[in-house]
Image 1 (tube, rainbow, N blue to C red):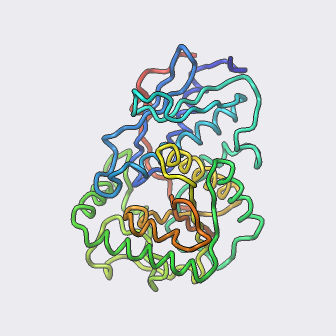
Image 2 (image 1 turned 180 degrees about the vertical axis):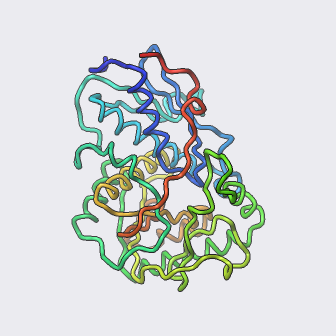
Image 3 (image 1 turned 30 degrees about the vertical axis):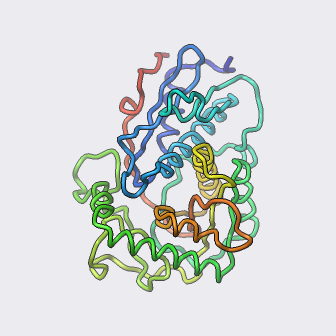
Length: 333
C-alpha cells in the first residue's frame, strides 16, 4: 500500500505532472484513469490525437505517452512512493499503454541520480530560439547519457563531421515535409494564428521560433510555408550540440521506453540549466530515419535528435484541463 494517503490533491498533482510532458505537435495524446481496486494509474492513448501523415505507425505517439509516464513516475517518487510500471500490460486492451502503481516500498527507478526531478517538470519547455556559443561540459554530456541509459536507451553526441551529416539528413526531411501537401495541411491544423483564441493543444504561432538565417540548423517550420523568405530568421549557433537517442530494438515497448528516456534526458538537461529543442523530421521518413544510424559505430534504432545548449527559455505550451484527460473523477480528499 502507498505510504501516504491517496488524497485528491496529490493525485491531481501527479496527473498534472504527466500532462506537462512534451508531445509531438503538442497533441497530448493521452488519457488517465485511477483504478480504485489496484490504486494504480492507467495511461491510455487517445488515438484521435494521432497524426496520420507524419506518424502513420504511431511511433511518435508512443514516445509522447512514454514521456508522460516518466513524469508520472517522477511525481509518484516526489510524493514519497515508489512507482511500479508495467508497459502494454493487457494485450486485449491495445489502447492501455502503461500502468503506474504507487507502492510504499522505496527503491530506485532511474530518477534518483540527480535527486528529485519534480521541480524540473514545470521549468522544462522546448526552446526553438538560437543558443549561445557556449559548449556543453563533458560532465553534462555524461549525465545526459546516464539518464538515457537508466531507461534502457542510449544517447550519443556525434563528432562535428557526423553532426553536419545528421543535420543534412534533417534538412532533407524538412524539405520533403514542405513538398508534401497532405503533411503540410496536417501540420498547420495544430498551429494557432490568433493569439487571443482559446486553445489547449497545439502550438501558438508565437511559440514556433525563428528559422536559422544561415540554414545550418533545419528548425521545423510547423506552418509548412512555401515562402521561406517570409519567415522570421536569426543567426543560430555555428557549432550546435546534437544528441541522438537510440534503442536497441524498435517495438512498441521500445517506443514507450524511448519516450521515458527522452523525458529523463530533458528533465536532467533542465536541472543543469540547458535548453533543448527536438529535431524530429527525419524520424518521419523511414529511409531517412535509417540513414541516421548508418555509421558502423551506430547501432540500434534512432528515436530522436535533440538539440541542446544555453539560451533563452522557450514559452510554455498550452495544456488540456485535467477533467478532459481523466476518464473518471478522482476521489475527493
